[in-house]
Every structure is written in structure tokens, then in C-alpha cells.
Length: 215
Image (cartoon, rainbow, N blue to C red; front, side):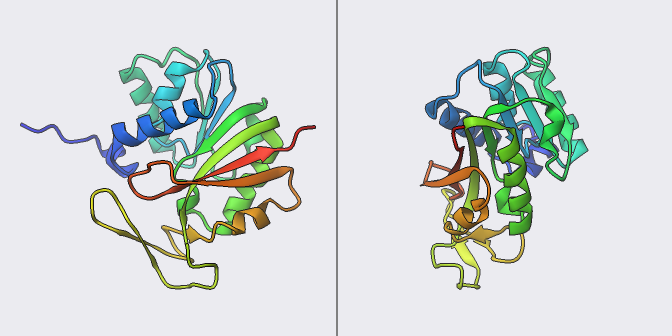
């Protein structure tokens, strides 16, 4: 008998083990160390969070998500992985009140968050992130790219490794963006964006790096 994947894992997009491990290994490759303070924006049921909590020093993982039910599922995942005693700080918040953690972060990640947000919400997120990063801190975020430029208003087919392309849209979920819009979104903040592009995501999400200017 084939055991069905828990509902929260499917709601988080499936590919639980693959994408959870992918984001963790990517951040390790980018220099994440156990002593770093880490912020997981849109952490959901902790598909990647379980790996980060296990790796980081006790108390160094902070996760925020708009869905209390998914956070509850994340706490269950931590218990299942026997890492719920490592003092992760999980909070339900839909407006990016990141100062509530009362700490500054060395690294942050928003995995498959900007893919579901309109631009004004992304800007709110970036302003909030800029206020809680240490100088030189790094915030990574994935997005669906519109390679045809911002004036292209038709859906874009995003290739996937399962051979079933996904449509993304300029004005509804799942959203795509001309990568150049993120430089504009950073204007007036102390963030600088670099488009890292491909990082082996099975659904063709690209990676952005936002770096806070050194003091």
C-alpha cells in the first residue's frame, strides 16, 4: 500500500524532500554557517526549515508565515524530525513585521513567496527585510521570470522537469516578473539586487540575491 503524502506537504507544493534539500544545500553553498542568524520568510510547514533548524546553532532560526495552520504543521514536522528542542522562533504574520523578532539577520530566504505576491507586497517585504539585515547581510528570494520584458502582458510558460509546463501571469497568482523590476524596487533602500538566475529548481523558479550595503 502506497502511503499518501500529508496534506500540508502537498499544499506547500509537493516535492517535499527535493525542494527542502535543494534550498538548504544552496544556502550552504552561499556561505551559511551554524552561527548565523537566519530568517525564513514564508516558511510554511518548514519544508526547508527542518534542515535549517537542524543545522543552525540553537535559537538561530526564525520563520514567519501568513498561515497559522501551516505553521502548526511545521511544528509537527520539527517534532517528527526530533529537532523541536532547538528553539526555533515561528510567528504568524501577513504584513512582514519582521522587527518583532528583535534581532538582526545574517541570511534570509523567501522560497516561492514572490511567485505568489503582487509587486507592492514584494516592496513591503523588501523594505522590512532591509531593516533587519546586518550590514553585508544577504536575503535570497525566488521568482518566476518574464524573459520578454515588462510590456509583455501574456502568460508565460515555465518549463518543469516533470514535462508539464506551468503558466505564470503578470497580474495574478502565480506571478512572473521582468527581473529588472527588482532593481527599481530596491531604489531608496539600502539593498542591492543581483539576479543569480538558475539554481536547479525543478519548476524553473529563478534566484535573486539582495545584499544590504555595509555601514
